Image (cartoon, one colour):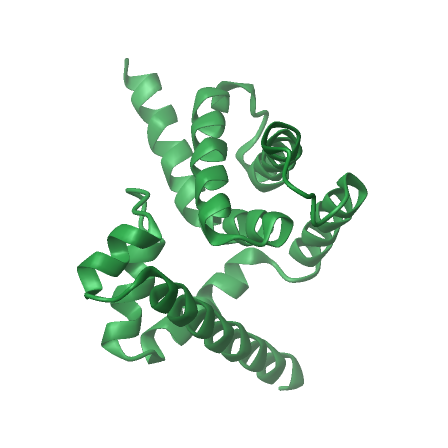
Length: 178
């Protein structure tokens, strides 16, 4: 049983570490926050269920992204929604995410993210933390907790993510220019 506990701890830690990147990938594929939330939950469950198949923890993100890619394709087949991106584009997004990861180590980006998060106003940090926490709270529940409608919460999340992305890029650029 201790090995199973260690395995659960490892998968939880890796999911938390890569949840932003996985969610961003899913959102880029479906362009709908509700669908991306649902897919993220499905991918997380699939990752947990098949974690024993992972060869090394170093390969976690590409492995999880492949699971996400397959879930996106299944989502479009099942939902019969108009597919905003083709399977080739989904594959290209996956390859691009891998390329970015190779160019800029995630740990460095994570350090800058932490620095940028600390610079946000307290209320924005709370909103981001609630929205991306590990309990899988949906946007509707977060909106209720903050006394706002769900569209306002999604708009704020989008603005905060833009601020964070710009802050991270600026900090990484400053480091590379030193």
